[in-house]
Length: 348
Image (cartoon, rainbow, N blue to C red; front, top):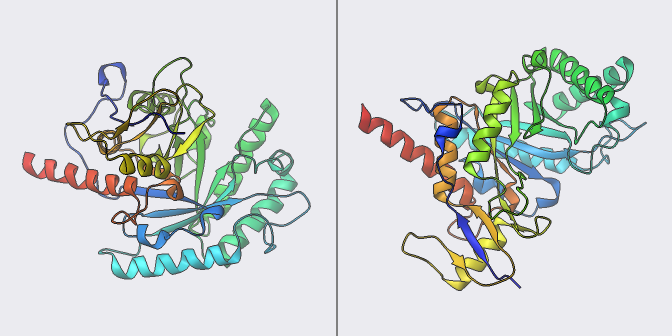
């Protein structure tokens, strides 16, 4: 039984962070990306396209001795690619200044990366995989690939991964195919490898602090994750900041609730305080999720520090009931960017 949910209003503690907010904000060319897992095929992702700039199809699970070109390889299938292309075509025809909607496919991910260590182990195995990856992107008219090995366990595996990323980027860039890498907080690439990739999707969540009553993706911890990634050699302009569409029970982090589950419960309770924070009070669970205030803080931090953008993991977890068919968090992002632009205009 749900006993306590709260919207998390992230707090600003900029003095503790090394990145300093700029005097002006520039939201031009700001990436708004969403992961779209194969197991969320039932959602109406088409409603989100006018807000998104990038759609990341999650994911291909590489298998030893099988080519990712085979149509029955888990887990992104032919119909997923076709649907994404249709979304891109429609979006680019209807959105002002269209033509910049990108489709990525994710490689690996949690529970889908077991073969990566063998694929990355030798120059020959990497070359075969990269060749297939290039052919897949050309065949399915993809704009990019997103590497997400979760995760190398030894120094040798880590080094092999660095080779795989650099070699893949070198080959794929010849065909105007972009390369991104998904990294957890405090996970890094070699400094030289950052130069090969187009963007780094920073998974600034699951940052659980034991015995605390904190959101697993608090603003200050997200800011610190960006700070440390920049210190490791990644240019801010390549960082796409991750915002989760789920919460973790602060008392039992393994207990996860989607944004949709939490908001649905809050809406049914019709509990609002004077600041508009929805809550259900009681004993048992304590699950924090993103509010408009916390999303705006993160978007503002990303824009002002000239990060590449933000992404949502994952759009199927978002609250999507009418009138928020596009996704409530995505709506928060859109409204935050509009507010930031309005604030900029007032300062001019």
